[in-house]
Length: 485
Image (cartoon, rainbow, N blue to C red):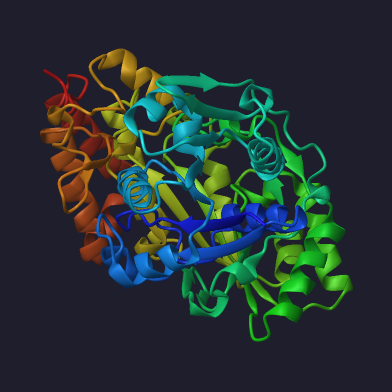
């Protein structure tokens, strides 16, 4: 029987979603078990402490365990944030286990398969897109020694040549997929922090894809189309988790936005309440579909935290970003949820591509105004820069503006203003304003967080109008960013 090791590779600690079972690998593990392969799971990012231990460092104890197992195949997931570390570990595995086939999936190589294969020679196979069917078909074909060109959804090497096969069709009926094999990973060793959720928790995904096409996000391009699991299937999984892992009473739904389809979310809530399941759960949500009736349904089903992608305090910028919501909807969603005892949070960005400085000021004013309505400034997190990810409209825009940029080899000039790891590698390039625009936004934000008097002053319409008029007059040109010549 062929042996497969599924290994969760850490990034440098910036992913931000907490530490939990890697769902993607757990789903792959379940598919491999069903196909009667021997599978073991290894997680190198159980907690923040392990990030440094396993980041660009070949820990001997872990290597000994892998060498002792001697897998025929190693599977890993590559994201933009862990790509440097994954390349490092793939090289280590290829050196220590030269006969082992290295398989990689995930969103980063999905969008740039040829570029990725050329830059990461230790990786033998790419799984492009959903992997449950593809991985099994690939293994069956490889074990039989047949031509890999017949396997849809992979890229592979043959000598010096690289082949990228046709993509596989998406899985239409998500209920057909087996529940994730969470027991491959140390479920009780993770500590999750997400709003009111603290400590032991598991994650569940109830859909794949996103109906929105926000310019900074690649989700809709990666999953191709939106599909939903049935409420029965989702809640069956919740009950299976409770049975299999006693003491787990917290769930985080990892959908990009659980509430993007109201009927879907309501049906899950109704199923939870009808079975009298007592759990606390959190999720990401859109702000344009929440009202008092919906909040009540969510609360009765155990929802304790909703996190929104607010993104901007200006309606025109929301349209530019394709957010399909409005500032008034964002305000209502933040405030009304709290009436029902649900913690509402939001993430925002200021200083984005195509944004006017006056629009960015509106985002700062938005944060101040929400504090006057009882929202803690800490519950509205704002980045004064935009991460650039492969497969996003803004990445395409970024490449057109900066043609020397390449994921294969990011020029040194992009290091300033970007997120780098402790070794100096550029983890994520950022679209980030420089000079007066950034300084002013940063200063205003600090003052909002530190001084209650300033928060009360800046929410006054006359003050906002005067500040905007003066600042826009002083900063007339479209802001330059760090990479401009």
